[in-house]
Image (cartoon, rainbow, N blue to C red; front, side, top):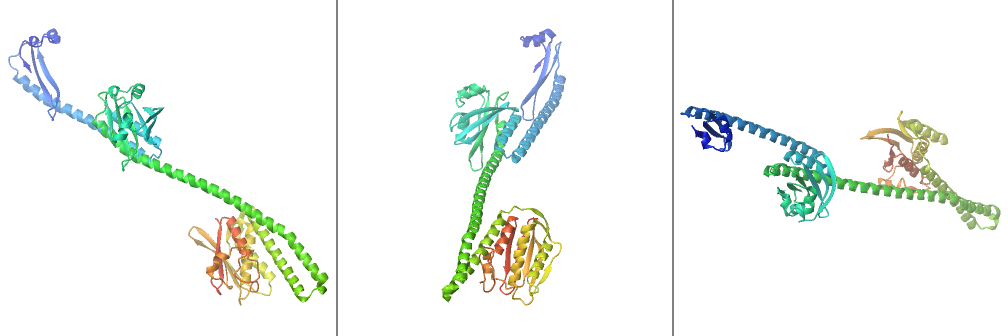
Length: 488
C-alpha cells in the first residue's frame, strides 16, 4: 500500500492518523515460505512524499528478514511443543508398560491426555457386562467419584462403543449425541471421546476429555489421544491377565488349603483309629493267649495230639498278633510325637547303632565303613529309631553273606544332600521296590527272614515327618542301598 499524500482523507475513520498529523503512508505485507500471511510493516510521515521507491525497497528487505525470523520462531515454538508432547507420550508409555492395575492405567491416561491437549478434565469407563461404566472424573490431580453407565448407542460413549471410532464435539450443548443430563451436570464446552480397543477389535473401554480452551479439539489432538489409547489397550490387557492369574492362583491356593485341611483331618482320624485299634486289641489278645495256655497247661492230658497242636498254633498266632499291634502302636506314636530339632552327628549315631547290633550278635562279625563328620538337623530320638531300623534291616539281610558289610555316607546331588546305607545282603528285585515301605508288606517269608514288615514303614514316616524322603535301590544277590534326604 502506497499513499504519497492526503492519507487522512483516504482513511477518514482512522482518527489516529488525524491526531498525529500524518500525510503519507507506505506499507507492505510479508508471508511465510508457504505464502501464508504473517503480518505487515509500514512507514508514516507528516508530510507528502514525492518518491517512495527507496522506502518500498527497504520495507521489502526488512519484510523478508522479519518473515524469516517470525517463521523461525514459530517453528522453534512448534518444535518445543512437539518435543514436550513426545516426552509426555514417552513418559506415560513407560508408566503404562509397568503398571498392572487397571485403575492406575486409566488415571495415568487421563492425566497424559490433559497434558497433551490442554484439556482441563476427563473421565474414563471400562466395559462391564456390555456397558461402559464410568467411575471417576479427573480435574488435574483432583479425582471425584461418579457413576455413569452407558449401553451401546447411549450417549457419546455408547456411540463410540458402536462405531469403534473417536468422537469430537466442540459444541456439546447443542450436540444431540450428548445426553442432556450429562451435559447439564458437567457443563462442558467441548469433548473428545476415544475408544480403547485391543488388537482383535474387542472393546475394553474408552476415555473422554472435556473443557479445552480455545477452538476445541482438532485432528492433531485426536492423533495424540489415539496413540495413548493404543498404549492403554496393551496395559489394560496386561492388567486383566494379571487379575485372572491372581484369581486363579488365589482359587488354587484356597483349594490347596482346603485339601490340606481335609487331609490333615483324615490323617488325624486314621492315626487315632490305628492307635485305638492297636491299643484295644491287646486286651482280647491277652484273653485268647491266657485261656489257650490254660487249656494246654491244665487239660493237656484230656486233649488228643491234634487238639494240642491247634492250641499251640493259636498261642503262636496270638504272640504274632501282639507283636503286630505293638508295632502299630509304635508307628502311631512316631507320627504323633512332636519334633525337637537339633544338630545330630549322624555318623556317630550310625556307628553306635551298628555297635549295638554287634553286641547282640557277637557270633556274627560285621564290617562297617562309616563316613565321619556327617551332621544333620533333626529330632535325635526319631533319627535314632530310623537308623536302628535301617541297620537292623541290613544286618538281617546280610546274615547269609560270608563277610557281612555295611557302608554309610553322604553325597551331594544338585541342591540336596543324599545320605545312604548300603549292604551286601540278598538284595531285592526293583520291580517290587514300591512295596518296601508299606506296613506289613514283606518280600520274604518268616522261614527265610523273620520280621513284621513294619521297620521300613517306620523309617519312611520319620523321614516324612522331617520333610525328607527315602527310597531304595538293589538287585537280587547284590545287596541293597537305602537313600534318604533331610532338609538342610
